[in-house]
Image (cartoon, rainbow, N blue to C red):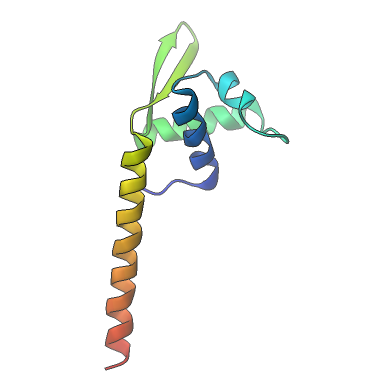
Length: 96
């Protein structure tokens, strides 16, 4: 599954820091920083997509990646190569 630019940015941070609360993720984002709620929403989306999980500490959630950077890169490259292959098949069909 492909990540948006914002989702990818959050994943890059989580891979770097290994685990963190939303406030920790925010500390690693360059200015202008998005709203806390924006980052929280993106992390929840990543959880639903199966990229991150969390450990609850009362009402606070500490998030951590459950897919490695290498696994994501491999999947992303394979998806890209499959799309190129499909385009090549369509293009060659057009020239016959």
